[in-house]
Length: 143
Image 1 (cartoon, rainbow, N blue to C red):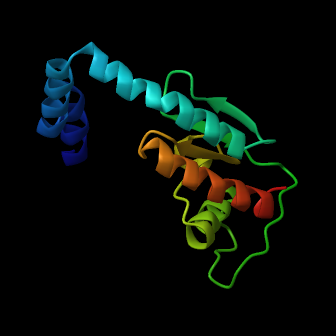
Image 2: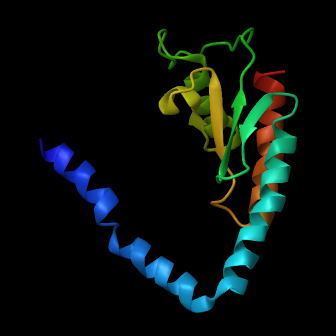
């Protein structure tokens, strides 16, 4: 019951920090907002390139893209892996551990067998660096 109260409150009473950020964006004006928005184009493009040749979706109206892992994917399990762990979870854990890439398993968002990559949390230069590591990890684990 307590969780339902929290869930009900969040949509009708956004956290104060979100309100402060929104006010700051309004005060800075459209030009500042558009400048920030346009940095996402480059970041999205380099993330999409790093995910090739995987099938992707998203990125047109959001700050993340989804990529489908091949059904034939076989990843060697390490001793710390859970035998029942979903393949997308294993891929994400290995990318974090071995490549420093924090992505979300698709099964956590209702898309088992996919990965979710956010490209809006980093400045473009850092996103480009992360995309290189992501591409190396995808090449090792997926291709």
